Length: 135
Image (cartoon, rainbow, N blue to C red; front, top):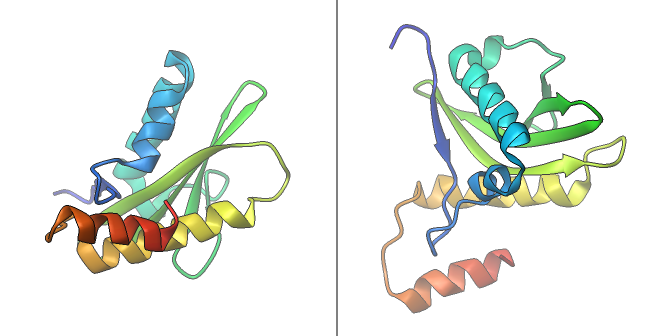
């Protein structure tokens, strides 16, 4: 594995991946830039320069991506075994990272920690998980 990390996206019980949907919603150039930074994160992980990665809470980090006058953020957390799990992303419009985005990332982290993207049970049970998260 030569020191490289693996990247995984949090998936919801309905199969959606919020972070991937965010990247896919961007124009082609912005999406390519965000994907290039995610690839850089995969290669360097916790050795990536501080101007690109910032710790927001005990577990949640943000990857900072700037493209001209636009600023994008991708939130993620580390897991043992050289794994980076990406929770969500957004376009930054304010000086501080919105608390709602941090809370969302923390909820998605808890979801991933509990299920690891493997959802069993009925559709009703999966819908209940989404409802509980408010997603």
